[in-house]
Length: 199
Image (cartoon, rainbow, N blue to C red; front, side, top):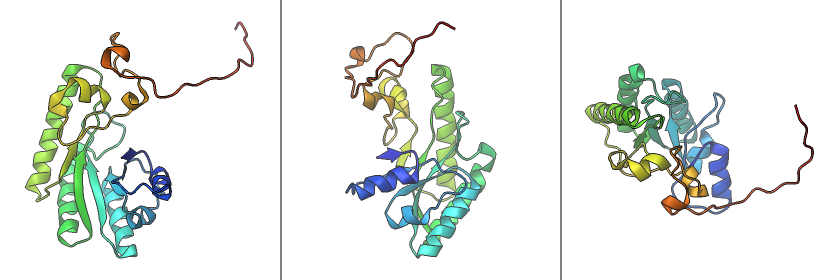
């Protein structure tokens, strides 16, 4: 399961979910120790996060399990391309020392055009090669969200991260409907109208 932040991951653990969980968006003050203790995989989007997670692992006496995120062009989060080499070298050293295990490498497509998505997949493949050259052997490589999972087989790698599709909503702006894709709405939002004004 993929969640945005650690609080969501811990809520799933509290609800009895024992399967793999990845939390990948962290604010600067995030506390990583509780996630490490509860077997939550952590996304790493910067050298500072890598160090903070390593420090948290040392504080609890248990290695962290991480997925390194490369910013392949969305520019939301992820390790900047110019910092990637240093991060994979450092992560490899932490892994050899038993401080962490790199379970995955991932990114996120901007979904702005097929050409841009293809460029991002190529950048991701370059990042994977650099991680391998640093001695990392991640079991999971992932970049595809709902749109790429449906229309871009080359982006599927080892897993896909279905977001909007799990709600039964089509991820495309080209007129393709949810029904066209065999998706069914998973929820309905209803409310009473409080006021209507002409502005």
